Amino acid sequence: MDARPLLAKLTCPLIPVVVIDRLADAVPLAEALLQGGISALEITLRTPAGYDAIKAMKSAFPDAVIGAGTVCSDQAFDKAVGCGADFIVSPGATDQLFAAAARHKVPFLPGAVTGSEVLNAIQHDYATLKFFPAEAAGGVSTLRALSGPFPELSFMPTGGITPDNVATYLRLESVCAVGGSWLTPRELLIHKRWDELCQLAGDSVARVAEVSEEKST
Ligand code: 3PG
Image (tube, rainbow, N blue to C red; front, side):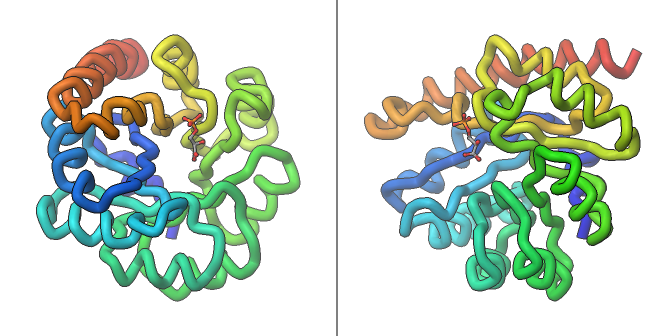
């Protein structure tokens, strides 16, 4: 199903894209990010610990919104849903993934950057898309251009988003959330610097709150 209702109820539009190397880091990391004001996390399935990390986070924080990212096959989709993922994100979209999404009642964000990819997603009834790789695909100017023919769409850009450009993305009407790995620097994870991760999240959440306020006035 489309992810718009889920994203609309988030208290913060920043979605950290998380790579978990050690399962033991999953719960303290989620705790640090949630304490910093983040309301949804995307746990990538790029590492073997990804699935169990989703399970561990959902078990420790049942009310938190924990999604699965880098979901590239129907088996991965099914398995992530089985682990309790609240939403599913893919860097692209295939018939196989749309079929898996149709079997579940979990919000799905298919990846799209071109007119044809967007049209394909619309034909499958999706109006909320992951715009990936955002910066490499032309960033804000490509998103503005896509809003011409597709004014009803919402995007979650990811890929190359940084503290310096995040506000520019969020100011766009078509952007409902922004994802990225800058909120979980590997160096801080490796050394379990949870307080610094919490601080980084808190600073980013505060910066973004100003943008959301501007946008709503
Ligand atoms: C992703 O991997 O889904 C995102 O594109 C993360 O990109 P980033 O590392 O540039 O934030």
